[in-house]
Image (cartoon, one colour):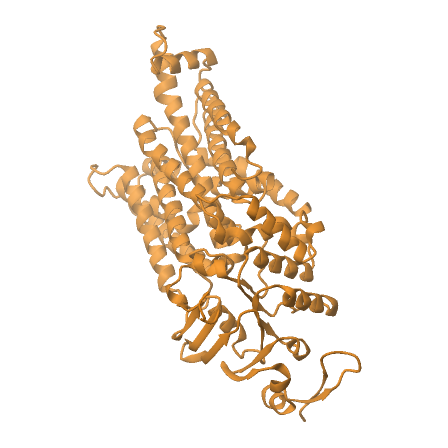
Length: 339
Length: 258
C-alpha cells in the first residue's frame, strides 16, 4: 500500500455514516434506531415488526436514492479527476466531453419530441444521447489530430464544439415543441434530479461506479506519470494513446450512465478533485480514493439538503451542488494560491 | 550482452507536411560515451532526440535499441533502458521534489509490482547525485530553473536507464549551474546524448554531431569537428580557437560575419 493511505480504512465508515444520515433525515425525521432496525430486518437479522410506512420510506425511497447519489458523486468526481490529470487542464470536468449536452438532447428528444412513442424511457434517451455526443467529440478530436494543436487541446476544443451544437439542438427542440409544463420538467431534469430513483437504478449505478473506481485505481501510476504532460508520461513508459483511450472512455461511460439516471449534476466533477488535491496532495494513490469518497459523501449530503432546505419542496440537486460548490471552489482556489 | 550498439539510427528520417525535420541520420552510439548534438535553431536537434527516445517515429529509416527495432518494443521496455529530459517540461501541480523524482520509478512498477525498498534506494541515490537530498520536501513551484533541471535529471537517474537523452539541459541557467549540470551528467555511468547550444560545452563531450537543416553534417571528436571553417559555414560566425592558459579545452572567440 502506498504511503499516506492509512486513513483508507475510515472511508467505508464515513460513507456508511453518510448513507445512514441520509436515510434518517428528510421530510419526516426517522430515528437512527429505526433505520438500523429496518436494515437489520432487510438483512434477515431481526424479526421485529416495523411501521410499514417508515420501513418503506427508508428502504424504497431514501436509501436507494442515497446509494445512487453516492455512486453518482464518486463517479463524477473520478471522471473529473481523470480528465484533469490526462488533459493537464484544471478546468476539465466530465461534461466537457459533450456528455451532458448530448444526454440533454437525448432526453428532450424522447420526452418532448415523442421519439420512440413512449417505448423508450428518458434515461435510455439520455444515455444514447450521451454516447452519441461523446462519439462525435472523439471522432472530431481524432480527425483534427496533427493540425498543430496538442492532443489535450484538441479534445477540449472538440468537446466545446460538440456541447454547443447539442445545447443548441436541445434549445431548438424545446422552443419548437415543448409545452411550458414539459419545459419545466426538462429544466428540473437538466439540473439533476434523484426523485425518481429506486432500487433498479442501484443495480445499474453501483456496478458502473465500482467499475469506474476499479479502472481508476488500476491506473494510479499512469495518472501520476502525466504530471509533466503526455510526452513526460510516454518517456516514463506509459502507452499514452492506450491509457488515454481506456481512461477517457471509462470517464465517458460512467458519466453517461450517471447522467442518464440522475440528470446533469454539475460541479461535482470539477470541485471535488481540486478540493482533495488541496487536502491529500497530488499523488493519485491517495487522491483517487479520497476523491471517490468525497464525491460520494458530497452528493449524498447535497441530496439530503435538496430535500429539506425548502419545506415541502424538493430542489434540483444540481442547484445545491452549484450553490455549495462554487463558493467552496473559490475558497480552494484562493487558499491554494496563497500557499 | 551482445555486440550491438546501445542505440543505432539507420537513415532515420522524420518528414512532416512535406518537409524533412530530420533527414537520413545514421549514428551508432558507443556504450558509455557522451555525444553532443549541436546546430543552429531549427536544425532538428529536438526532433532527433525525440526520435531517439521513441516519442516520435521515423517516417523512414529505423532506430534500434540494443539491436532491437524500437518500433517493436513496448513503451515500458524502452523506458526501462532509456530516460529523456525534455526542454521545459513543467507542471502546475503542487508536487514535491521527492514526488517528481519518484515518478522515475514508473517503468519499474505496476499493479503487481508495488513500491519497495529498491525504489526508495534509487530515489535517494538520485537525489544525492544531483545534490537535492536536503530539498526533497520542497514544492516544485518554489524551485528555480536550475533546481528544476536538476530534479528532472534526478528523475531520469531514478529511472535507472542505460541511455540518457538531454535536450538543451543548460538553457536558461546561470554559468555555475550550466557547468554543474554538465559535470553531473558526465559523471553518470550511462551513455548520454545531449543537445547543446554552447560550443564550449560541446568540447566536453566525447563526440560531437553537428546538424544543419535536419542533416548530420559532421560527426567526430569535438576538436576535429569544430573547426573555424565548419563553424563559419553552419553558424555564420567567424570563430577563432584560442588555447586556454590553464584549462583542458581551448576557447572560441566569435565574430559575426559582416
